[in-house]
Length: 146
Image (cartoon, rainbow, N blue to C red):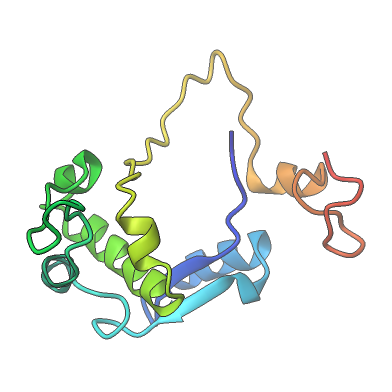
């Protein structure tokens, strides 16, 4: 299943022109949120510090002590880019006052973009637009979409 993102968090000044063109043809520009490097799009060290301060994974029995990280988050702890991307999401969730509620659920998975093309039909972004899978072409709504 391919899902069309509602919002993409990007590091301000961090996209190449080719990626900007790709995003413009696939998404409305209001679906991008550009975050300031290091202040909003956190580095991995800042993410680790923030997780320690907020104690998202503490148990109800002992809220003063943080519990173990979810497996997916722990597996990515040494990947600077993945953890920085998680930091951008964490900053955004905190800005929306959703961080404690959502992060503490520990429902995190590493996205695996690989799939068996012998068993699945793969549609590129242009095909999805032409077939009006997620939004119609006349007003951008869901009416008449597949």
